[in-house]
Structure formats: structure tokens, C-alpha cells
Length: 144
Image (cartoon, rainbow, N blue to C red):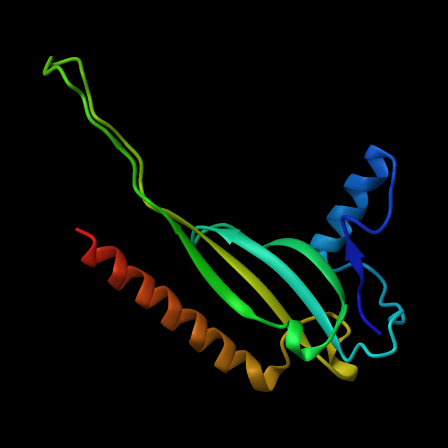
């Protein structure tokens, strides 16, 4: 049994759709039996923009171990607009580097109803996440 909510599965009225998405974000969907008998894991896909934003759940569904890919950081290049003239009022428009972290996590068993990482793996998972963030900053600093 897994929580299952996907933006592609059901069609709701706009009001019901907003409520369904919010329940999915909060993990308030009742677990249901998986339709595919070969499913062994509960899968949760989400993304996060920057370090300070919360997770935005894309879907919760049944799946298999091979579908769990972990997290990937995507960095957008920093943009600088160069000004041809050199007037005091003219300013260079800059924007900070930004990144998006996209994750596909999963677990199996009785303790996985909420689609969370089992307690035994949570320390390993967060250690890997901290290492990836550290490596991202090293690459960021080398770009200067």
C-alpha cells in the first residue's frame, strides 16, 4: 500500500484539484493498494528551488527499486548584462546563480506508508545530500 497522487491520474474541477494537490503536498492522502502487482516500493518525486524553499511534491506512486534515482542538482548559469555606454545612471543587471534539486525517493515495507525514507537510511540520505550541496558550492566558487 502506498500514497498515490499524480497530477496526471484524475481530472477534478479546479477547486477540487487545488485541494487534492494540497493534500498530496502534505501527505494527507490515504494509502491504497498498488494497481500493478509488480510494484515493490512507494515512490515520492519532488523538486526544490534553492536551499531555503520547501519541497514541491510532483507525485506519490507505486513503483520498483530501479525507479528510485536519488537527487540531482541543476545549476542555472549566472547572467550579466553588459552595458555599452558608461553613464552613471546605467547599471549592470546581474542575477545570482540559482539551482533546482530534483529528487525521486522511495522505500518499501510496512513503515513506508507515508513515503518517507526509513529511519535506518535517513542519516545516509541526508549525508549524501550535504555532500552534494558542498560539492555544488566548490564548483560554484571555482567558476569565479
